[in-house]
Length: 92
Image 1 (tube, rainbow, N blue to C red):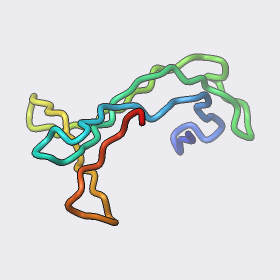
Image 2: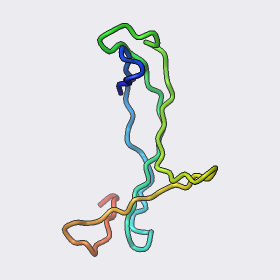
Image 3: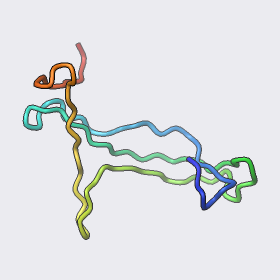
Image 4: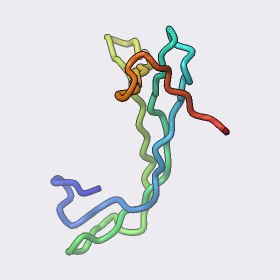
């Protein structure tokens, strides 16, 4: 990730897309909620970065914020081939 406020710096590392999959239990529809955290490392990005080598905690969560309240959001997943079918992920 690059930042305009730190032009010589970028965050590097691996951060997998994690979350919760409802597997068809939400009103017979499947849904996904993104939620994860990982440490990333500052590195040089074409110039010398004063933060290079330092670790930064990065997290993401799909939330609706209203005042002081935060509510997790689940996004419906649809089968575009068969719109009425429930999408299920699992071992076969």
